[in-house]
Length: 203
Image (cartoon, rainbow, N blue to C red; front, side, top):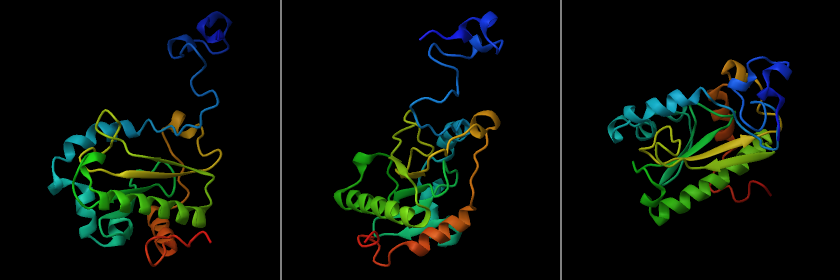
């Protein structure tokens, strides 16, 4: 697809060619729903050296503090659910095993099953309290995979709404989060089913 920005003389935006790819202008809406978070790059690059073992790992330290202080939503037998301190969207949760292991292949069957169950419950609860229209789920494995803390495995649960990506993260490196982390934690924790499984929360 030919782009007029390749020719500064014919473009209403002089200098575009230096920062434009061969397809379209950066930031032009297309078929992809993106969460733009360029500010997280410093966290991703810097976070690895800060966590060298379980002794300085925030995911290992969190269960030793109160739920409110650590932003923990639910404690399971083998894993727990915690708010992301640097959320992509309001309600961005992480499911972490208690054990300090880096890779998905390092967890056993019981941990795998509970992480999966807690992820499902988290989705049900978030649907109940904030009615997202979709989710992003995933595990960033290793530094090159984009993990902010690669040393301790964690499953991301990011609620999504139509129009939740806009110009602010791109232009101002700012993400509009409409609730405080403490308020979100309380809301999600209060809606978490007492049995922990959440199997009946959608009924």
